[in-house]
Length: 125
Image (cartoon, rainbow, N blue to C red; front, side, top):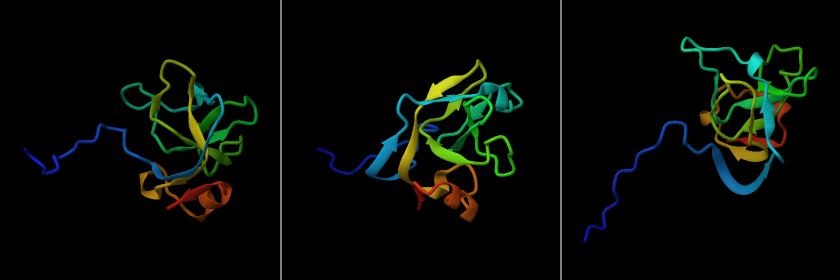
């Protein structure tokens, strides 16, 4: 009988972003991502990484990735994206966290004092 631990592997984009499961509040019914506002990469994919801060556009009410220099609502994030999503085929409804303790090193943008100030219900560790 082998009692030694076996090496584990991590599936791409299935890493854990939550630092704690104690206090979590997810968005009810998810958020609708505005695919038209997400730039495409060289393959035509419009991928938004898990852990991305998301902000609601004031004009449409749809959600886009956080842009610090935005003036259309994208500068005010309130939700952390729950999973990686590709919106190349159109708008998607996905889950997010409104209140959570997040591992800052796994967030795909720089976690600075400005972002921390704009997201008081998200604790970055």
